[in-house]
Image 1 (cartoon, rainbow, N blue to C red):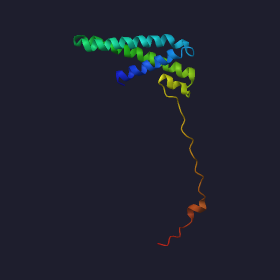
Image 2: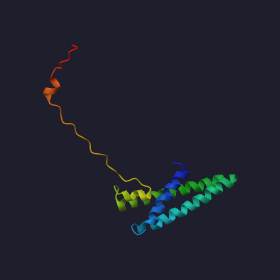
Image 3: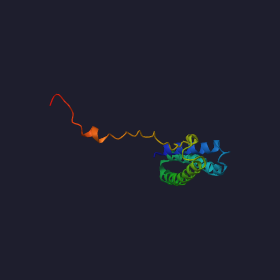
Image 4: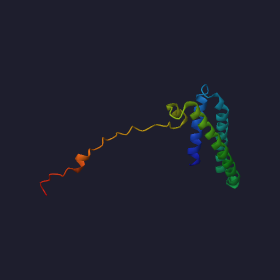
Length: 125
């Protein structure tokens, strides 16, 4: 996943937790930390662009941020799914897809043995 998409996903989950702080107050600290990391990532990305000479250092910091941020995003995702349930439509507020079951299969009635064995009366024979 590209960094931009990853950071967008992180921002979405963190904002969802903040917006629903009354429902999941125990995740607020983690969301705040992830938001801080997103700010750090933006600073580091800007620094990476501005200082070609220090690119390696900024890249290393971004790897550290991605590692810690990924863990926090996973923790927040698990906490939200645990709180609301994997089928809840509320998950869409956090940028998550609820588990949806497909339409039930239509079971075809079995064909009687007599119908299978009957020869066809095709006039072309």
